[in-house]
Figure 1 (cartoon, rainbow, N blue to C red):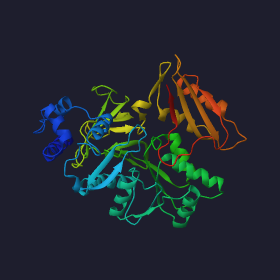
Figure 2: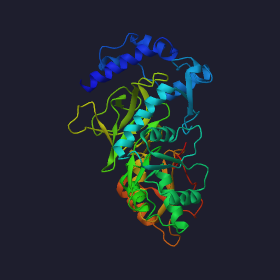
Figure 3: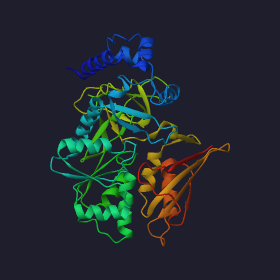
Figure 4: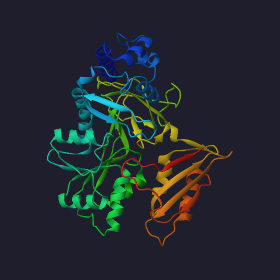
Length: 416
């Protein structure tokens, strides 16, 4: 069966399941004339309205605490998570046992494509709080037969010594934290050459598919390969990577109807162009999302030997729609700036500040160095100018001035 037909069948099956109890999508499907399903994916895209995070947040305010998106009675739900809140009020998200299993099935694909095998040991550095973090990865690892080691509630030095004592083959964390651990290891004269880590599975922020960032992670963890993926609390794991294809992540088209649209419009972008990723979950009936504007900026590319619908994402997640800024006619994204900064030897941590309070926006990159005696300011300024044909101010700051991130990094600061 062709991919589009598989997706349509799954979509209509999901609609039939949720219509009786899901008040949020009863309204939307009635508006779209889709209560009985759709004849084609083209019809679905043409008639089904988008779902936005602002809309979900407003619904949870109007129908506290969980909104009107739940398909089943409240007592059916067994898992609670919430978004990180980096873009405003956190969304509260519930799953039944069955919908959580759907999420874990997606993570199983991430594990298998990364090369994880039953019997491997994986160490997880996230905080194990209500933010979904790597919770799904952890539960899925257990189901797959990996030995899953929680390493929350520790300082970075304690985590390193804990890791060295247990020698896991796999490390799960954000790209930022993989670099942070390597940096702390250098400061503490801890060698990672024999850490046992062969695979670093990253997510939660751009970076895993950025060549310069990836190269620095792998240099900091000798013998390890980095594998990227991405997902969202409210959506689930949406993509996976391969160790030998470092700049591309592949979407789980069997689990999602995927679109890439011009931000703020319903117009599809062409292959190679940048647009916003829009996802429809084809499972997770307890808390579904139809045509959800994720806010993630991506660049779709064809997949060799696959149907046109099965596109991949070059460069992973480039940034967020609300993070893109135009400075003197130049589009700047967090991931593109990050790629330039990470390619400059000696830069340890940085913050990009975009000041839009004046008529012409100004950009300043403040950074710390790995060696206080070395100042790469001139090289960094030149590389930024060459990359963007734009003058970007750089400022070296003292060690310890900039914040340290263990989960999602916030290096992109817009003043307006």
